[in-house]
Image (cartoon, rainbow, N blue to C red; front, side):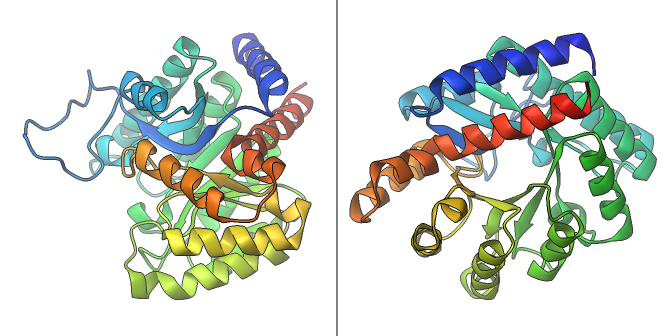
Length: 316
């Protein structure tokens, strides 16, 4: 691992350790280099309209959010028929995440993104290496739904093995908006590495409609409770199921409740709306203050601290 990446990790860990009990953290946000990929010229909002690091931080300030876990916005990263061109495009998107985190080290937590289908498996492995070893990213995500490949397909499993071999954490878009991310597929990955954390974004939600998501919502809640290495970011998930999952995990005990993280999926979800909703919901639930602080940020801060310590030990 490069010395600059190691120092960046040490600095971030120091900040998280000193402030974890009071941090509010959005565990899922997407940013885009608007100099390379500007917004479409329209007066109307369109879903997932790209935002820059500065746009994100401005809304974080308005919403009393201290930090955000950031990765690229797939809707703003152009792909074509060439795996090499797609590799270069996705690498540049990851590089923007790295540069932004260097500019705002106490606001943005940088995470990576790879794609075995659009970039090809070899290029996807190269992106993992660059994200972890050059940029110092702890988390590397894949999106089987958007790019149409099964979450437990052989190329994905090979990348999961590689990410974990480097000491990093694999993450997935995990929702009912496509047939590519069933609960059984996530469970296969979790069971393949039962002692290593797996981060599943959306807890079965994503862009799915009510009926399509209902079954996966229930399966995801049950899977997470019986598989202790699965961690969920509660973004793009129906608020009624967020409440149900929070109550189920709260009743299951401290080890379970530490594995849920509040999140917005910005710009696909508004930070102000989502965290306003989380805070209002917690006022209606009989949870203790420590648990609420955990869901709003401390859980994710400690998840990161444990992960970075493991990453540094593997890369020593």
